[in-house]
Length: 239
Ligand code: SF4
Image 1 (cartoon, rainbow, N blue to C red):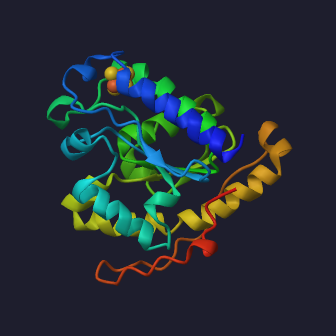
Image 2: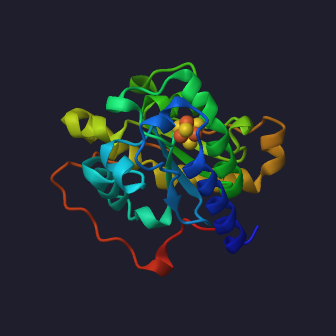
């Protein structure tokens, strides 16, 4: 698929999301939030659901949680426009409650189709609901900073997944923010592992590949300055 074809396919899915009345969450939304990002990226971030600011703007991860996500990306030289960012459910749950299982299930085909189009090498989950989709059977406190191969039924069969806390949780708790900087620091090495794994695709199909995370980088103190993003021609998030 060319970049133009991916862009068109993603926009077609977004148009369906904006018109969707498939679950009760459509009743209270101002705007649906399909997700956004570079159509040829290798990295997809998946959060839980839109909050108040996202519902108003129709964009994922705006406001303070979005600002922190940008800082986390900046700490490894990545920019939000070079990845794709979306959520498990595309419409805001009332009062920011957790999405119900039937709402997650009804919305799941949109995310699966987005992942089929994007075919990412790395998925980063943000928060426990997103983690539960890609790493069932564990808890966020155990899973954050760990990596697994992705179940092909999610639509991203050639990807690895890295679990992280939700940035909103990091805003509330300094220890979670520190853990989030350490976890995002693993992402470039895991992306390299994922690329190598894709290059050895027959092993993946045979179930023979395993993904051990690289050693964590040195802890990044919160008061360290965010590094300048690299120039465009230095970015390595694309096919
Ligand atoms: Fe449709 Fe998903 Fe919105 Fe529910 S949350 S109305 S399934 S787009």
